[in-house]
Image: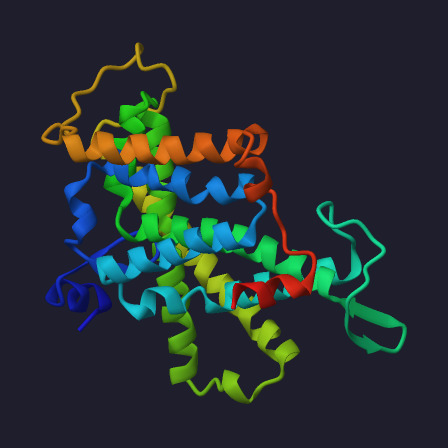
Length: 300
């Protein structure tokens, strides 16, 4: 049984990055309101305090649990999270931060001429929560919407049909590209290719070889999509006045009170995060970074 058929049997639907439940508690919201959650989870970029940003990170993970997103959805991004984490920690290990000015005083360890300070560590943690809150927030939004929902949301924003179709098709093809790559790799393994026993450089050599049939497959699919568009009378134009077409996508949907509440909350949180730095009482909180390790002892 194919993965798509297996997903249907399990009550799942194909979203941007994987199969997720067809219905979640977030399904009661309009697609545009669900996409507004991206604004909410990008608010940490205007906040320095890692304790506050950790709340956004926990909120993003809680949304996955509430929506009952399968663990396999998140496992796809473990490698990316590890690389991102190493990049952040290595970057701030060698370069000073704009938040904590050197000289740094609290040493964690020394390795030859290299000294790793607590200040390097806490700045890395601060930036980590900033990025991960936004990344996992966006991943969650993409787990509860599909290309049709994105098309509806862009339609609300008055984007021309040509651009909406291009965006929706590109996101849909990302999912297809990912699974086509996995299918080719599995076919290579069935023919005796043992990637697990190879060194990293040898794996890269074979992955480059995988790209050749993958690119050919995607070009063939792109040509088939172009033929399908031509057969349905599609005309590519940025000027909506030059070409009129009747659209039925999303016509049955309307905004409800819960949608306006969610959108207002997202915008309010973002505006608060932007202006809070200049508000007496809130500024010191959002700009706070525990530069002294003794701060943690005061929490317990």
